[in-house]
Image (tube, rainbow, N blue to C red; front, side):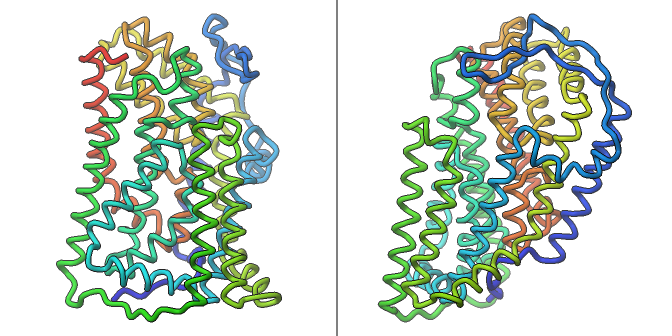
Length: 466
């Protein structure tokens, strides 16, 4: 049976691989600032006070560039730039995860939970895989959860190993699934909701085609994961077994942990009905997860100095990921400060002139895919792109609803592929999986999914989806 990883630590190999990849991207991005002239679109404030592109104001070239010292310090300067608060929140969120899992590991609750799940569901592993994948996809599709699901990723990865599979299967059931759900955008308030508001469409209108997309993408994901899991089972000589003996104290601790985390998930679920909660979901999950971890540890008998030491050890073990997050976030900072992001967008839009409808909608998909490499926030991209691409698409006779769908697809799937996404880097580090290994595992699914979603957009165009 595969050896189960103890605790949460960012492995040296995974850390160095990610550092090299991101450093190369930082250098290439800085090189672009010397090749691309500065430029900017005129912007106006919408009713909510958000700055959006003023299509009537147009685009103009301006002086651009970024001093070398600013680029060198960009991983630090990003904390004071627009969106820096979210970067800081992700870092705190990450450290909480590390501390909680270290405490759960030390008091034995993590292994006990895995033993119990395997004892109850070990005989229906493939059904469990299907249910977990659907759950994570639904979290992304209906409430827009993505980063908020990171605390659950190590649990699913450990469960996958306990069931006789590998860490990649666990990442597929959790991280890849929530990314797919987020991109399908059935009722995602952070992509579809914001984009439809900016386009003047009723909130979550046109849901039927996005719901069909959700089911087709889920089917593709499930086939991909089942094929991988069955390949592992075929090459195994021993059946996955795990002894289990019930313990009343650990059962009480598990009930406390599950109850508090479950309450947090319910609060996140309610955010789709309570707009005021939508900007607080990450804070809610962090606080509830912290409360669940401390409460469960106390019930297990881990108290005082021992509990503090466990949290400290967990946070220090996960701390290297902070550098990855800051470096990845600095790429957007470099392009924005050098005034070349708008220029790239302007060139992309200009290249659409004279193209047929089907090429235009696929090119819009491509624009969002490319921009997502630099700007991972779906809401930020919506404010940047929607006021520009929707009026432009209407000139070609393309319905705004189809643009929203292309935007959701372009924003979501690459979140679990691009090395500039903080949640991906954190999850890979927690699972001790290098970025290269993840790409080798997931690229075929990404390619098939790109084909599937492109066909869905073309079908929407043919059907006059609105």
